[in-house]
Amino acid sequence: MIAIGSDHGGFELKEEIKTYLTEKGYVVKDFGVQREMSVDYPDIAHPVCMAVLKGEYERGILVCGTGIGISIAANKIPGIRAALCGNCYSARMAKQHNNANIITLGGRVTGTDLAKEIVDAWLETKFEGGRHQTRVDKIHGLENK
Ligand code: RB5
Image (tube, rainbow, N blue to C red; front, side, top):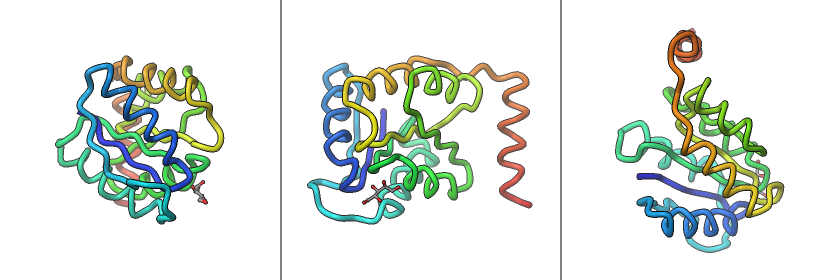
C-alpha cells in the first residue's frame, strides 16, 4: 500500500511510477495533482505524509520538479523521514539506514527508467535497525528541541 503525490513539476513522473507500481501489483493511492495544473508542493506533501503516519499506507512517494521542495516540506512533519534520491544506492541506504518512510524524486531531474529503479531499490530494502534505530530516534528527538 503506497501513497503517491506530486505537484505539476512532478506530474508526469508520478503518473509513470503509479502505472509501473500498479502493474507490479502494489496498491497505489494517488493524492494528486490529477492533471498538470500548478499547485504548491506543500499542499500535496501534507496529505501523503499524514496518510503514511496514520498507517493507512506503508510508504509514500512524492515528486516535484527537483524533489527538493517537496522533501523539505515533508520533513517538516514530525515522524516523517523523507529522502530525496537520485540514485539506487541512496535509495537503498535511505531505507536500510534511515528508515525513510517517504522517498522524493525530481521529475525534471531523474529519467523515468532510473526513477523506477530507484523506487524498486527503496521498496525492496528493509531497515537494518540496531545502531541505525538509535540514530533515527535521535532525529525525532530533534523535533522536540
Ligand atoms: C515548481 O515550479 C518547482 O519549483 C517545484 O516543482 C520543485 O522543483 C520545488 O522544489
